Amino acid sequence: MFSGMNVRARFLGAAGSVTGSRHYLEIDNFKLLIDCGLFQGLKELRLLNWEPFPVDPSSIDAIVITHAHIDHSGYLPRLVKEGFKGPIYCTAATLELMKILLLDSAKLQEEEARWAKKKGYSKHEDPKALYHSEDVEHVFPLVRTTAYNGEINIHPRVAVKFRNAGHILGAASVELTIHGDQQTKKIVFSGDLGRSDDPMLYAPEPVTEADILFVESTYGDRENPINRPMNEFAEIINRAVAREGCLLIPAFSVGRTQLLMYYMKTLIENKMVPDLPVYIDSPMAINVTQLHKEFIDYHKLDDFDLSNHHSVFDFKNLQYRRSQEESIQLNYIKKEAVIISASGMCTGGRIIHHLYNRLQNENDTILFVGYQAEGTRGRRILDGEEQIKMFGYEIPVVCHVEKIEGLSAHADRAELLSWLSAFKHHPKNTFVIHGEQEASESFARTVKADFNWNVTVPRFKESVELFRGI
Image 1: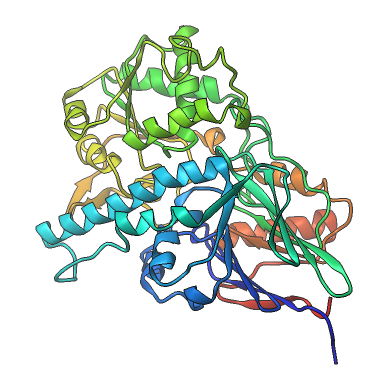
Image 2 (image 1 turned 90 degrees about the vertical axis):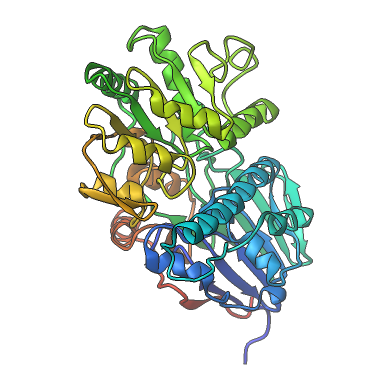
């Protein structure tokens, strides 16, 4: 007969897939959710967003969000709508980003539902959005923010600490300290880890102690060096100009767009590329860019970097496009321009209209600069599909397709292993999550071989006991 506290984990997402990050912990009677993301990519994954949540939302006591990306926070409005009423913990920058991203997510879903009904390409007679803007507004009063490295008690026996994870503004690794009847244990979630040498964001902060570790594995099966991204970017831009076409870049509004602006300013000022106009066609990216000025301690850029006329977000070639009318006008630009638009995996937003017009033009170039999840339009274009379905039509892909690996916001295998090497003692168990099955299994084998740790690749909805009688 055991006494003391029992702790279990259940993998409700990001197990065998990159998206839908949802990790459910039962710490005796305290029920905690780490991340609450949307599934993206393959249709079979997206359909999971519409299924009843595997546990009663009203029974969940608290949620911890590692960062604002939709695959980590995008299900919050639905969960609140279905009865969750507890506190949501994250960093201050994550809250401000979620205000932008979640409202945009609702808007995109509402627009997609209206368009599907108008054009009749949904199998549903009256297609619905997963949630609406008013549902999003109900999330924010529940949010409690804290700074990096400041411990906050979320239960009399459970404390949480956020550590900088790089990746995007406000992203965090999470340390949970559980005070049992007889022992104190620490559970660590890596969150999405950023690059060790990102020009704008600080490297992920090392964590040195964990009894149980949950580590991401997006690039767990490959190296993704940042050796010459500036030179490679310049070569692609110059090729696009030589073809007398435009360069279209799908980019996440948070992180990648700001990094691209940094690179474009540097390339133009150093005369590595022609003096081109650079169009930022994403109202969300414009709003996110402003947050870099509010959260200056979260990144490497200083006051001079952000000052008027010198700023990477305010140089002479940069032109912001907020309205739909301004966005449509970009269709008439035939050559010598760079258009950066969201979403990064071509799953929605203004990029879809640009793809509709540019994929069919043999002079234009589309450049991918971030991870493309399985089943997304971006992944299908990158994999060489000859036709892509949009707005109910099959659009031929005749433009040039390029890719730069080194601009991804995710740590590669070497950087993941470097982060793991900071642990002073091996965890009791390490769970490899947030990666496609092949990447997760490959990374698990590498960790086992290099560190001789006990490593598990969990299955979707699998439940495991972490501690018994602590």
